[in-house]
Image (cartoon, rainbow, N blue to C red; front, side):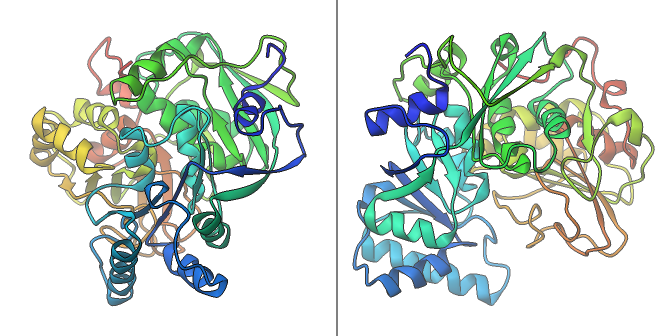
Length: 426
């Protein structure tokens, strides 16, 4: 096993033997999930297939998270169909407000090392932080997996990503993800498996690992995989899932390798119009903003809002700027409510909302008008992503976003952070 990459080791758990990159395989799935943005087409495919039931009601989940609660009649109609389907087939439905699918699956440890997860959403790759073979599929493939319990895959080329050095206190997973994306480019990892490793991992929290895994798909990656080390084991076991250590072999062979020294990172920003258009925050200093969004499946976790609160505590959102804060799940919301973080956000003038993908995808709760500029902690900033095609979106970590909210412009968050602070909570 010393010669296996993490990708090969995980697939061999399913197949009995390690496959080769480029090989096509059929594997049993451990979890299939869909949300209100992808369910309708999947339902049509199930009907065309004549499928009368799902393969295993315990392994199929539905989430109402993208446009939730329903902001228009079309969404309401979809939500009603999902509720009826869930009742008919006995599958678990996470209704409006429960949380964003990827976050809920992670925080409830519904996926883990070696699990094959089919999600009808590209950011299913988030779960690779837990050692799961999780990736996004189209609604058609997801429907077939719902009916059959199987999926076909082309084994991806493994790419070694080595994170070296000690991350400074102001660095978060988003900065590492953006730095990697800037180095790889938007097409630098198409149908590859990014295997994250290196000495810096011991100082990178699970919340930040989920962020890094989430954004691997912006480089075209099929998977973004982390080893199951002590940090991951402690996190999953705290959620009731016992796991064993799992890492790539010392003699594993990779198609490519990228080394990133995180000790030299500054807060990073992705400039419009692409997530890989990356710069340090100092390069975009002074850009005026109209809206700030803190949340999404990328940066809507407890650590993210704690980081934002370090900036917002005792300060106010600048007049003329809207700051929308959306925890990624009800569990995150409740923890932030108990520890006082939501009070800090509200007192600063933030609009604190229920769990939804709405602002991230330009569905509701904060669309941008023509010419408006936003700083967002989400994962994409293509034209029209959050509203009008002539609006602009800058991607950044939650501290940078909060700093923009209180000053009305993009600035280095280190100028507002307490001395010696560490934003990642390992």
